[in-house]
Length: 188
Image 1 (cartoon, rainbow, N blue to C red):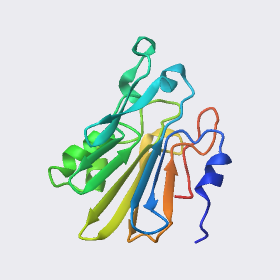
Image 2 (image 1 turned 120 degrees about the vertical axis):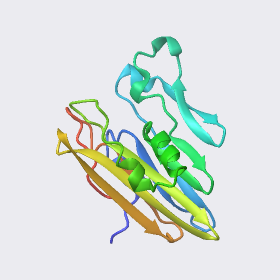
Image 3 (image 1 turned 135 degrees about the vertical axis):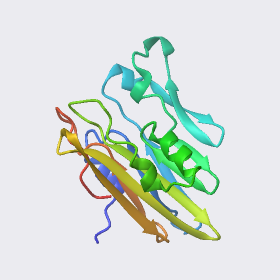
Image 4 (image 1 turned 90 degrees about the vertical axis):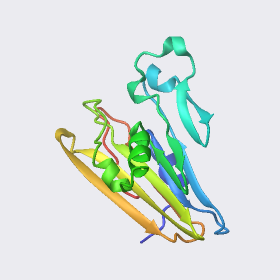
């Protein structure tokens, strides 16, 4: 498979939305993850990241301008033992709570689907990093509407074992800007 440049992929997309990158450092010694947010509405642009224990959460930059916290205030990063969970919404808590009860990443995500923000039906993207006994693997998932229809949820999970040094994967919510916003389709 041809390796793509994450930098070029993002520069060529006017609106990727929210995104997750997971991989391994160039020297092969460190697991890497990054999460980014963008927003078109005033409410979506009114959020910042703050540290919260071993994780990160979003909060309103200006609480007086916050109109609907339901899809913009959440913990995108939480740590559960030797696992780091990264998502674009409150499914972080669903994954954390259910994995703490011995369910898997995929089983936990079966309880969720895309966001209820029609006509976009924003995909829920999630990732999990697992480091144990010198071994490293990760998985990424996208839950999205069935070609823009809210009547079905398409579920995709990609698992990566022992990633090569300097390699990573990107998943984001939208292919580009538009009305409605087209869901991410590839290059993960």
